[in-house]
Image 1 (spheres, rainbow, N blue to C red):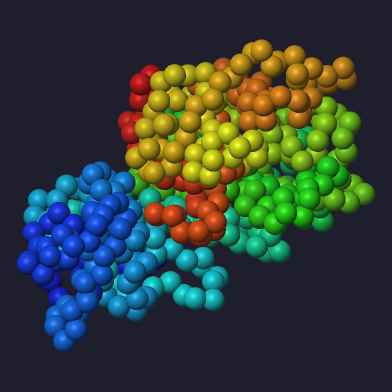
Image 2: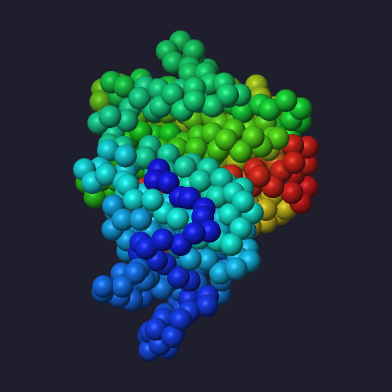
Length: 468
């Protein structure tokens, strides 16, 4: 990540001035003459040849909410040259949350995939404020949140020719090793004997599955939150094979696992007083003679069975094992899963909004608020018992891919495995990927969910849950 520095000494580099700050006559005239200059994320360029600074960028702030500052930061860093120092002149007494949003936007908008041919920007960004020390914590929190999103994006953007389950597990181990207080275990081979769903889905690939448990357990923490992320490193659809266009972006089918890992690492970076465990069932859903078949009966970690009716509905199969493990072994207070689970999510809610399922009104409200603060939107959908008959199987406890509303049916399937705890399921297939730059999102993987989870975990005090 490039460096952002707080300072109270303006220099001579390209300057960003939020519209609404004190402006000299030249800037005021430009704003007056430019329709919509104050719109969120709008950048208006004021060239000043032979003068210092030689260029001023006016950044629109909309209503001035934290999200507006984040959008302004992302737009500004994209406008600046990679190797130039960018200075952002902030008004006196600017709110700490505004600075946090601006810094997050600068980092998020300046993201590039770590192995991209074009390197990340090398020029420094300076935030010019009247009292730098007052904003140091805001800058630190913004950096940790942005770093989590960068990691989730990097993991998701990595081509599946590199990103098999073994590689992904090794990345988690390496990241955990850089942070004190984290423990990680990786299960493979015979250690997965009870993980029937994970073995079935990963059985068709030459790259065997892995099950990774990453834990942050600070001293004195009494509240235990388990985060579960779908980790399909590539999804062909298996024997129920996808069409070509549907397979192109399936390197992103582990976006949920990337987000929960990044959030747990972020919890350690923030030293949050909450025990957090991330579970990532990792597998490649491939086509071969050993691939699982429609009609197969799978025995999950909890001993219950599912009749496979569509091998392209593999995500819920591996999540079921992870959720069963959490309930049986970890006994958490709360479970949240993130999964790029259904195309029906995009049909119902579009590209920017995830589907939220939970029987708990207060938990749903707290997650929705955490997502809104991060600019990661979600919409709660119903868990209607009217569709339960669709899950009936004559030879197992349930079928895996019943007819009916796709996202709802997947959530009803998963509901059996959460156990007797508060829980929420986030179907984030659509917002996990952006086709173009969009506010703080960059083209490609969005890292959706990492910052939402950090916001939610930061609101916990180690013993109580918001709204509980």
